[in-house]
Amino acid sequence: MTDIYSMKMPDERRDDTSQLFAARVPVVIWVAVIYMATVVLQFINRPLFLHTLLYTCLIFLHIVFYWRVSGQPLQKPWIYVAVQGILVYFSGRIMPDGYPATYIGLYVLLIGQSVGLYYRTGKVLLCSLFCLCLFCLGVVWMEDFQLLPLYFFIMIPLIVSVAGYAVLFFRQVQARIRTQAFLKDLETAHQKVEQLTVANERQRMARDLHDTLAQGLAGLIMQLEAVNAHMDKGNYKKSQEIVRQAMDRVRETLTDARLAIDDLRQKTVHNVDFNEAVQHEVHRFQSATGIPCSLKIKLTASLPSLIVEHGHRIISECLTNIARHAKAGQAWIIIKERSSKLYIEIIDDGIGFDSRMTEKQTGHYGLLGIRERVRLLRGKLDVKSRLQEGTTVQIEIPIDKGE
Image (tube, rainbow, N blue to C red; front, side, top):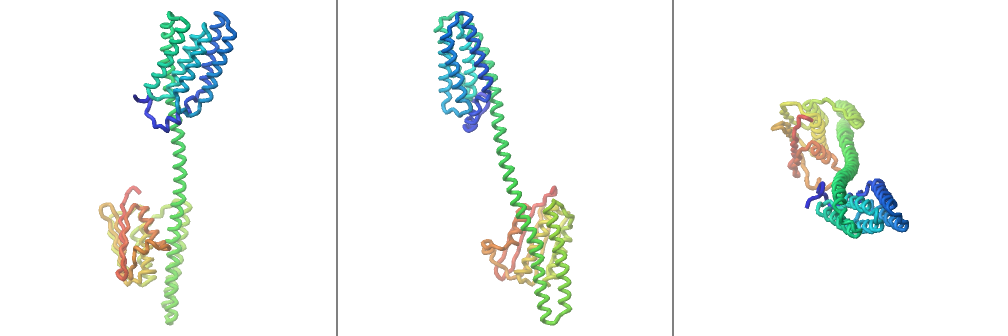
């Protein structure tokens, strides 16, 4: 058998059980109206004060039992149906002239509640059959056989109406529970996004600081070392030339640092031509190190700003690594575009390194920054290097024109 209005998981059903009796006040008002109707019918025919007092106690017990179990998960809902059905049965038997109101009103209510207790049509039908059997038994006990068809004529439409209302009501309860669950999941997801955003910003700050201040200071140190070497040889003219280059390098580093700070304060996109930026980086590298660097660029169209920014930083970091560690005599940079992909290859003929050992060591922030930037561009990075055989860095980046 299928659910009355939707298929549900066990956890959702337990949650709905806790919301089963959300409309406590309307139910209590309904029971109070049935109580008043029963008492009035009984007193019109023959007042029975002791019976009325006992009837009042049973109805009060009926309400208390309902109130206590409402809002709590029911492991065995049939116990609630059985206890309430029996209470209604004996309550009606106490009032011989007012029992029709009690039986019709409260059994119809119990059938409506069974819709919320059981989500399968078969079990609701069993509860309805149980209530109708108790109803017939009570009528037979009162020896009102001739009125039984009339009672059924009144009761059946009420059962259909109340059951239909119950289905709509518990659909709303289910929708509210799911909405609350979605809101909770959304809040959790929002918190995770905030945490990831903070982590990404920290990584971005680390990359920007490394690619501006750290690289600039590293280049300045190499130039000062060159100045010191020329001073020892008495080559003051060359020393002055390198000092002027160092001053220009410091100014550029300061400008880059200010741009990085501006980017952290607000998301600004700087209009930079990728070709010019790479050519300028190569010229600065050759001027600072004296290492020849061959540059080949073959681009058919402009690149997205995100690729320009990170691609420029990646090439700059690779050149810095060549200057600081490679002891190379020559460097090559090949940049080309093919099949909506950007290929960058940086090669040097230096001393190389063991790439497997570098992965396990700490402090290699340059290579880490390159990997992070390639990952942000959804690209692929391949570093090939062996001792005394140079290093080749190959990068493949998909080009999304919509960026």
